[in-house]
Structure formats: structure tokens, C-alpha cells
Image 1 (tube, rainbow, N blue to C red):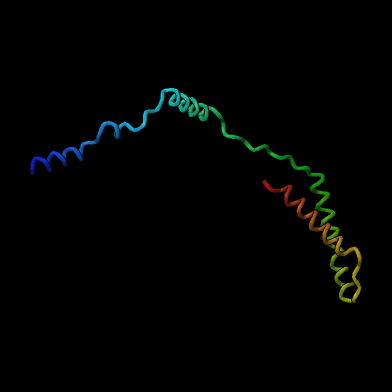
Image 2 (cartoon, rainbow, N blue to C red):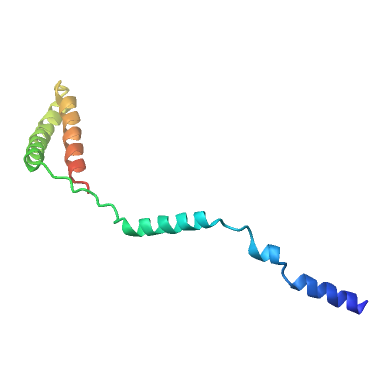
Length: 108
């Protein structure tokens, strides 16, 4: 009985050759993998193109934004008196649009 147990233990501890090898990989796939890895090393990392700022338009938008923003306090004073200037809402929309354009132009 002891001989049987020792033999069974020895067989259980010894890996079978079929399991140790795994699935064989064909040589063509190995070559393709090596070629792909080499190609990936040869390709430089992509560079982000630098967007040219249109400084003239940016400056004009900033001036328009400042000009419109200066008119809002007088419009609010009119609103306190019970008068809503008809272009106040349009001015506020234009302020938002100009601000968004300037902000998006300056984003990296």
C-alpha cells in the first residue's frame, strides 16, 4: 500500500509533458508578433499640431466683450425702474458667445 501511495504521489508531483508545453504557436505568428513590436518601436509618438491663435480676432472679441459688459449696469438700473431694454437679453447672449469663443481659443 505504501508503494502505491508513493507512486501516486510521485506521479501527481511530476508535470505531464503535454501540460507543460501548452498549445504550440506556429512560427509565422511569432514572426508577425516580432515584426509588429519592431514597427511599434520605430514609429515616433504622435505630436499635437499647435493651433495658431488669431490674435487680431481674439483682441477684437475681447474689446467687444468689454464694451458690451459696460452697458449691462445701466440696463440693470433701467430694470430697477421697471423698464426692460429690449436688447438686454441679446447683449447677455452675445457676452456669453464672445466669452466662450475667447475661452475655446485659449484652450491648449
